[in-house]
Amino acid sequence: MQSSDLPNADTTRIADLRSDGLRPAGLRPAVFLDRDGTINEEVGYIHDPLDLNLIPGAAAAIRELNAKGVMAILVTNQSGPARGFYPESHLDTLNNRLNHLLEEEGAFLDDLYYCPHLPDGTVSAYTMVCDCRKPGTKMVQLATEKHGIDLSRSYVVGDKATDVELGQNAGCRTVLLTSGYGQRVLDGAYQWQVTPDHVAATLQEAVSWIMADMAARV
Ligand SMILES: [Mg+2]
Ligand SMILES: [Zn+2]
Picture 1 (cartoon, rainbow, N blue to C red):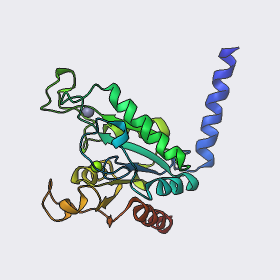
Picture 2 (picture 1 turned 90 degrees about the horizontal axis):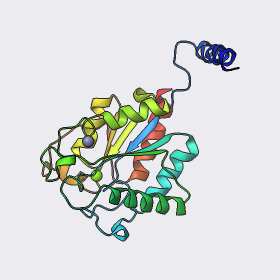
Picture 3 (picture 1 turned 60 degrees about the vertical axis):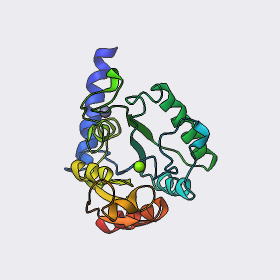
Picture 4 (picture 1 turned 120 degrees about the vertical axis):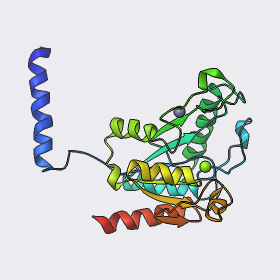
């Protein structure tokens, strides 16, 4: 009977909370990853899926997160649909290729979020001020609610000032990569200058720093 199952489920949840003391049960750290210039080579708007190619070592870095039980979650601004470059379904095609390339190297993303919007787009359906376009935090908030993530133990890695600001807005630590646009951000030649917690040349170096930083905080 359903009516007798429900109270049992509630009792189990309360027991889990008590066994963990004051900290909510089961909250996990995550690394929120940008896509272009962070996992795959920055080549501008990608029309041909075959132009999406991994930066060497990126899959190994994500594989290390997978092995350590740290969630790897993609959060990416993709304004191509808002600019009329391609339909939103094209983003699924690109995501499928990314997942396939990672799978070939034994790595996987725990989840994937994209923002297709732009305040000054040309396609009305996607032209809006939204809460998900980085440095807005909605993609991170959705992932946090779905997966039970502890943002104070989590990290954002990307190559733009907007990635660093996303992490700061969400209460995470931040790593700016010098790949993609990152060196130009550091030089003050792209977007605006930011103060990440760490600067790394590659995602592999970023993950090495993150794992050491995590261990030092426990
Ligand atoms: Mg990027
Ligand atoms: Zn959006």
